[in-house]
Length: 414
Image 1: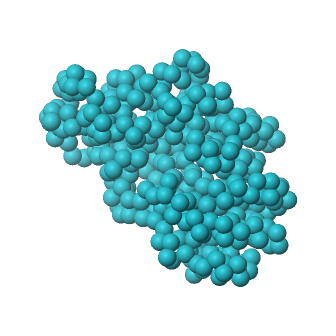
Image 2: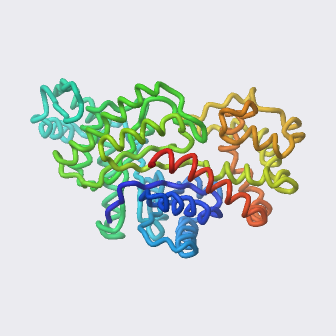
Image 3: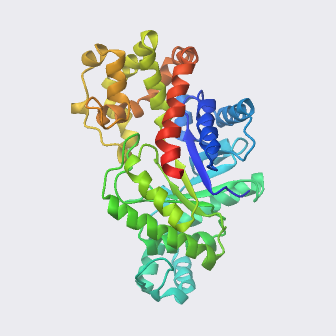
């Protein structure tokens, strides 16, 4: 199963917006693009929502049938481990192998030294086409990278073999995620990680490195854009070179995790994938969930009340809700508005504070990030929340489709 050149991962916490999401992809493709949808949901999100991986498959299949989508599409078991993968085997055809917990744990000495020996042809001056300056690569640097990443790649191989034994080796797409590490990978480290992946027999088609800067959930990039551009440019060169050197799949491409709402980076990414004629996978986080809340607030009446009640229910549990997302949010609880203040907001005010429009003086990225991590409160509402999604489906769908099409797909791929 080969992944197409451009794919777009769409999270949907409550599995009600599949048609609105696919409508955005269809509209983008009607403008001459070729983008393929990937519906993604993690084990953690399923656990919080009390949903099943089969629910995500059903949502994707229903959207495809309803809108007459004829191309490939994927259901991503997002950030799974060997402990959680079995739950996803029937429903998914895309697996994001999350081995963050194994990064930094050393493999056995024999495996490390075997890897160092295998990299001997690249020691000295490592020349990667597309990167102006050669890299000085020494055996100790290879050994250090192996100590940091090799055991994690061995674990990724164990997960891949387990999936392949159940589904067949050619019946799914594999992504390896190394984005949840303590520091961005250098181009040389990415080169060595790809060498490890190849030696472990993982036919990875997407790789999610950690980039410089903050990729916080639901808000724009925070960091040095020029540095990001240099890293992204070099990573694309490394991938092209590694495909040839190590026999990795020709479809291998970069994956940008928490890629939604990184509006300041989209012109850079757009320019560089064109420069390299490279593929791209962007995985969006909770942007669709936020558009649901915006749609409910915009609807007024009971919809607005539910949006307010989510905040009211979440605020006393702020630290508990934020904790699982600590590495990917920057929220100062003291700066969040008082519950009483939010309760007094009009529909227009609530929408202005939450919608990701940095030109609007009411926009509050603290509030937006907090609503992002507060979907557990909506889940606790049960049918009150999901019935409201159905009642206000049209206005929510308009927000969801507009957000994905005009703010994400067209800037990224046009």
